[in-house]
Length: 166
Image 1: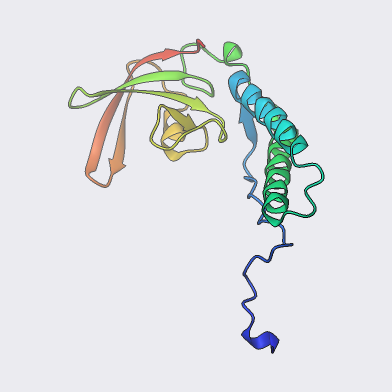
Image 2: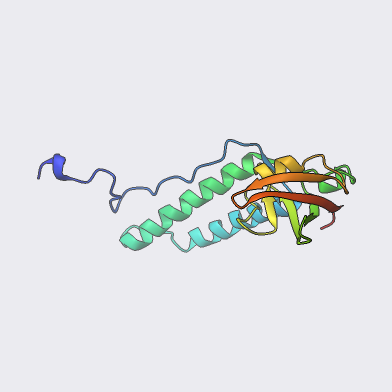
C-alpha cells in the first residue's frame, strides 16, 4: 500500500502517547500542592510496578507507556516546583496561598483560594495564581472593591476577608 493512503497522525500500537504540555509559567506550589505532586509520583511508580514485563500484551504496553508519560509530566512539575509558604505572605494583602471571601454587588459571596496551576480546578474554589481574576486580586486588602467584566456584564466585587490558614 502506498504511504499516501496511510493516516500519519494515527497512534500505532508501538507509538508513545503524546506528551502532556508543561506550562511555561513559574510552578509556584503551596505545601498542599507540593504534597499532591509527590503523592501522584508515588502512585504512578507503584502502578508502573504492575506493568513490568508487559511486552506481549498490546493493551498493557499502551497503558504502561501512558503511565510513563504521566510520570515524566509529574517529575517535570516537581523539578520546577517553587514552594511558597502562605505563612510568609503579608496577612493583610491577597497573595499566593490566600483564601479570599468576596462579595458581589448583589450580595452573593464567593470564596476562592489562590494556588498553583496543578492545584487549581476549573469552576471550583481553587484559582490558579496565573488566572486573570487572581492577577487583579493580587495586592488588594479587605474592604477594597474591583470591577470585573464578564460575558453577562460588569460585576463589582468587594474583598470581605483574607486568610492564609490551612
